[in-house]
Length: 80
Image (tube, rainbow, N blue to C red; front, side, top):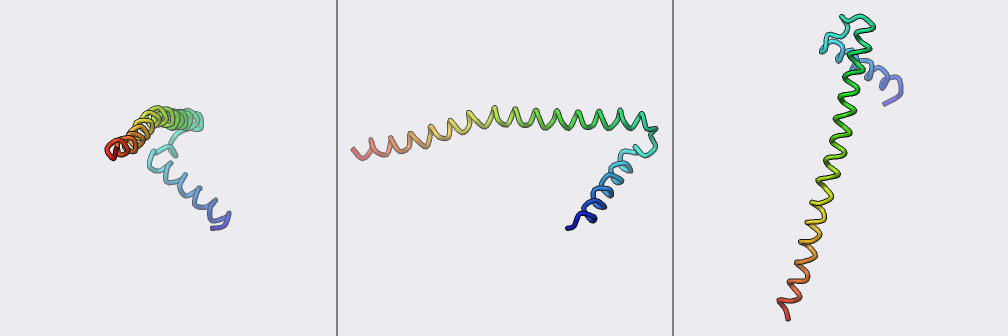
C-alpha cells in the first residue's frame, strides 16, 4: 500500500465519520468542539484501559506464578 492510497483511505474514513456523525452539517466552531470532545473521550478511554489492565494484570500474573511455583514444590514433597 503506497502513501497516496493510504492518504485516500484515511480521507475516506474521515468522510465516513463525518457522514455517520452528521458533523459535515456543523459550523467550523461546532466541529472544533465536537472533535475536541471526541478526542478527549477516546484519550480518557485509552488511559483508563491502560491503568486498569495494568492494575488487574499484575496481581493475576503474581497469583498464577505463585500457583505454578507451588505445584513444583508440592510435586517434590509428594515424591519424598
